[in-house]
Amino acid sequence: MSLLVVGLSHRSAPVSVLERAALAPQTRGKLLQDAVSAEPAAEAVVLSTCNRIELYADVDKFHAGVAELSTLLAQHSGVGLEELTPYLYVHYEDRAVHHLFSVACGLDSMVVGEGQILGQIKDALAVGQGRHTAGRLLNELFQQALRVGKRAHAETGIDKAGQSLVTFGLEQLAAGAPVEQWVRGKRALVIGAGSMSSLAATTLARAGVAELVIANRTLDRAQRLAASLGAGGTGALSESRALPIDGVLAELPRADIVVSCTGATGLVLTADDIGTALAQRQPDPAKASAGAGAGTERIALLDLAMPRDIDAATHRVEGARLVDIESLAEASADAPMAADVDAVRGIVSEEVAAFGAAQRAATITPTVVALRTMAADVVASEMARLEGRLHGLDDKQRAEITQTVRRVVDKLLHAPTVRVKQLAGEPGGAGYADALRELFDLDPQAVAAVSKPEQERQ
Image 1: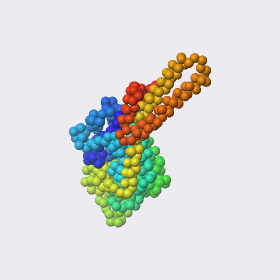
Image 2: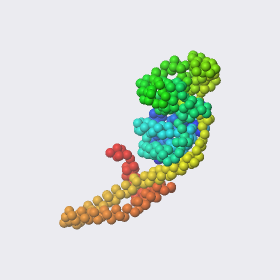
Image 3: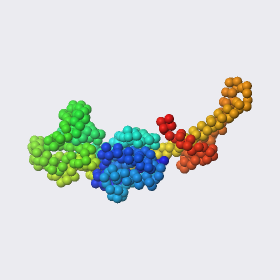
Image 4: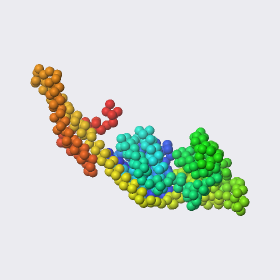
């Protein structure tokens, strides 16, 4: 079996395609089940974020695997295969490992070095485990990816190079002003209470907004988030409250900053909603005294959802400023700190080599176990034959002879089995398991039985 990843991201596809291909949570589960039901794939995990959709699988046939995974992505995303194919990328075996480790370190993110991706990788693995589609290979791969990502952040300055999409988006809205200065005294509305929305709410509270309102379809979740950021506990926050999602339009005229990231399949806010809210806004006395009229009142909107929550036509609404995933893609820089990025790339290359060696070495283990089992059976058989010929042996003598024969067999097998494990861990070492099976005429079914999970053997 071999690792294969088929996917698309902000680097391979325009935002309009990514938006249409976005997978709802319930769709991801169905995609996983269909993937492992398909003939080429034994296990699968889907990594779906605001700027990437990737399907990882352990397959036994490369071309059939690519065709099947591509077809499944098209079926479940709703984007036709013919339209989707030009934007898909394929990575196989070590290149697939390299890709995921790079993703985990933030090297492939829209904002290089951002740490949010680690939580998304962890969530993707949890879904695969919950659906029982993540087997030995993908469990080990994704867990190692999390360790590699943490190592990159601990050992390099990639954290300084990267930011979360929330911070980056707020910086774009602030248009060059320090975010803490720009948000001071403003009222913020966060729509959604998932991981990205929670990060947005926390970031805004720490940056110094005066009021924070969180709207969500599940009110108690919004209430818990609002309570955790409670007024007086973080920055200059004087009010933190929650409201149901159907209260957003009534709250909108009071908001200076809106951040939205929900799982909705349609628009949460239309351009007309924004225009109506601006028309209902009351003039700010401080701005009025400075000579600014009601017509200059502005609302800043950050849309981090995929598909989008806020109508793209909002760009044309006077008094509104919208930053969305497409805007962020255009504004992001690929290499903000070249030295740190190079250091992370070095870590990724090192970890890919180590993971590959460990996986190759693991392929020889069932063969070695089967060989030692066969040797133990031969010893037992020969001892039984010997006892039939040498009568009068007492228990001590019988045990001594048995132990001696076992030691001889163990010493004969020790050097070749240790060496074959070392050789199997090197590039091109996959053939050593086959050679061992041929040399000792091992039963393929005995080797396969060792390879099965313990519960299957039982």
